[in-house]
Amino acid sequence: MSSIYETRFWTKSYNWKAQKTINYPKTFAYFIFRDAAAYHPDKVATWFYGAEMTYRELYRKVCRLANVFVEKGIKKGDRIGLLMPNCPQFVIAYWATLMAGAVVVNLNPLYTKEELRYLFNDADLSCVIAYDQLVPVLKELNQEFKIPLVIITKLSDFMLNTPVSTPEELGLEEGWLHFSQLLETDRRWAPPLVDIKWDDPAVIQYTGGTTGIPKGAVLTQYNIIAGTMSCVLWSQACVDHVPLEKMSVLSVLPFSHVYGEICCLCWAAWCVGTMIILPRFDVDEMFDVLNKFDTITYWPCVPTMIQALFYHPRVNEIDWHEKILYTGTGAAPAPLELIKKCRELDFSFHEGYGMSETTALAISTPYNAFRPGSCGVPYTDVELRLVDENGNDVPLGQPGEIWMKSPYVMKEYWRNPEETAKVFTEDGWLKSGDVAYMDEDGYVYIVDRTKDMIIAGGFNIYPREIDEVLVKHPKVADAMAVGVPDEYRGETVKAFVQLKPGVEDVTAEELIAFCREHLAPYKVPKLIEFRTEPLPRTTTGKALRRILRDEEIAKQKKK
Image (cartoon, rainbow, N blue to C red; front, side, top):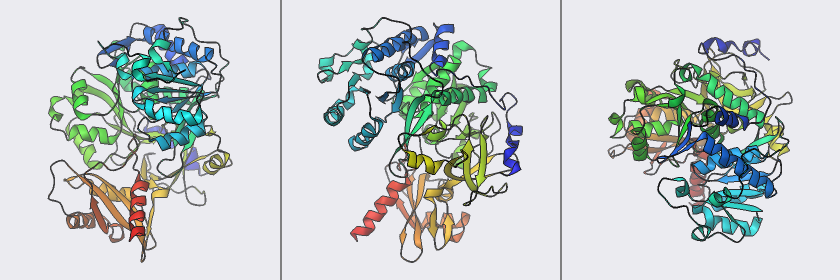
């Protein structure tokens, strides 16, 4: 291993309050939440369309549900699927699952029935907690899987001035349980006695949707605690200035992904913050909610969310300098034009990088030390190398694949030793599949995914670089380049472009000419296709290039 990476020289770039190492406790993950409820029971824990719940109220509901799980036969290590958008019910179910020693299986409520079928089968679920809109899909899936415990809720059950739904109204199958009624069946306000170990599985986060069959990253109790502590302490210089009564987190990032869980649910519990919960990202709704609060401490998000707000006609309703004190983005790179817009609006913005396999944390911008084009420096206690195709460290400034070790790195892929062996080296390094280079201050610049690389005429082309150029065009909202089969070059570059609202007078020739001004000739797209609908991305903003590439291959086969 090269000495330059071994020295972790990047810690010189940390904010003065960021710790270079942390002594993470080897205990239960739910203790993060338990302590918040014990020390500050009257603090508002959740805000959901005006309905508020204190930490005392939330903790009692969590304890009740955890005891119900145990009474219904849920054992330590059993998998509980959470199939809901953001809502207080998800928060209750998340902490109750961990309190019962079971494992949270994150299920995206936007998944199709076929996608859910694969995950239900792979995770071997003992329980599913879902919201009412998915009852028809669950009825079909349950005929096949016979899940022992099915619990259904309705989002409005936890809203203001709305009657609680009934099992009959939701059309529940015989034996299925109603979430709100279930909380009334057990009045014990202490956690069940379960022998939880610090390295037991806590969360299974499925990943790999951009590259093929999903794999379940197994994140332990220790991963969750370490990720939470590091997430909070990284921004300590901000957190220390916010009084407890004003501590809050804007929670629109999906809870069904570990990014949302660590940076919203767990961050809030550690800081005793109020989660301002929104079940979806809707631009007008976001402005309405922002106007209800004087200030918000933290907003974890993806760049497309910021872009949607800053290019909206209502953007000047908000004093962005005072409204949101700390914003962190991840999952996808922020275009340089968006970064400039953040500066123009005096908006606190910090870019980061993480993976499902690393509890969503790996690299982040030090507080108030933004460097355009970089996702920051390695997080506290992250060991990082950049290596070539032979596993040898590359010099600073040269691109290489990111390899990592850290307290946030997953234990394994769920019941998949073959894929686990592929992603870990013999001495324990996690191979990310992402290519980056590092400068002399330890700042990392992501180049692209190794699997997304286009090989055209013998040249290696990273599509992200093309995306970055296209979104610099003043009329382009989003862009995604892919490699499509070409008889002569092997692959050729095609770019899919979504224009800004109201723009119609742009031609493919104009964009190709624009690219020629900023890219080497072999990188310039040969084909441009305009899309009116948003380009395919995961719920956390990652480009789903595979979908576009598969569409192109299917078109060519039909010719």
